[in-house]
Length: 371
Image 1: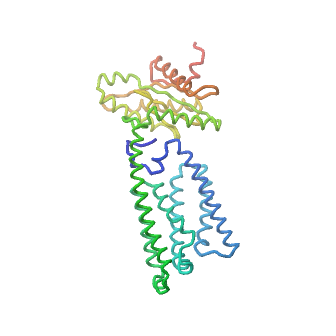
Image 2: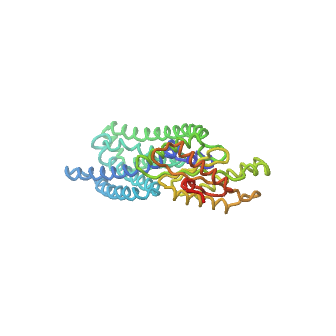
Image 3: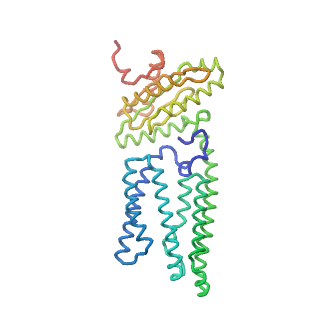
């Protein structure tokens, strides 16, 4: 979902920039980056061994990075739920490598070359990735922490007396630029994150249903098209469930619209509680909700609808009681458009209404000859 309970600030920068369909792309991208990172670490280590120009930091870290990145990439390919955990592990390892390399360059490279080697050009990436992976306040603490540790290491390990005695102002300038530019990067990233957060809140108003905090129909149609295209490209099943609350007008008439709004908000939370991983739910309009089920055939979609139906039945609303729903299930088939798919689910839902409500009807049920 784009947000939970309207708290845009609880999302990371990459989550706010990305819409919900980006989740799968982010997972695949992480797998590719980990595998490429393992290959890069192995190639760098092998090259250094061949030319006999390795240093103690690379000798220790590059084999570890090769093995760990490759292992995490292979595991993540089959267990996407471990994405956040592996992102944090990879980041911690890269930070440890960068800080260790800084110490090595302070003691050896800086006095000899009068500047840092090309490896340190990548140092600011640590600050950027912190803001991509964490909320703004946490990212700022992590980035400033790394910057502070870098400064402390420079104070402890840089040979200031040697550099000053040799009038090596080029090396001193490189050291100064490393820390000043790092602080500027962090401040700019923090400012950009705040600006982007304001934009995300504005965008959320256009994409979210204000009452239920679910994606609204406008965004839902975009989400549907993207997920549908993925299913067609990979020849995977795809189903939708149209659901409509039974007797909801009576709730408004008897208890008032404030209570009706409370029922809708709680119903939205209940629906999400009983959905499987990867499913999406949209407030389609009024008391109608559309559940999107990628990689799900009609039979499994019916099971999901039955579980949601039972969940609503077992979760009465305070002062109101049980508010049941009617469900219509439709699976994508060749030759039909998205509008036709939604229309089929809608017809099945109305058939459930006609039969008394609190039922799940599939398109296949409607095609069966009546007895």
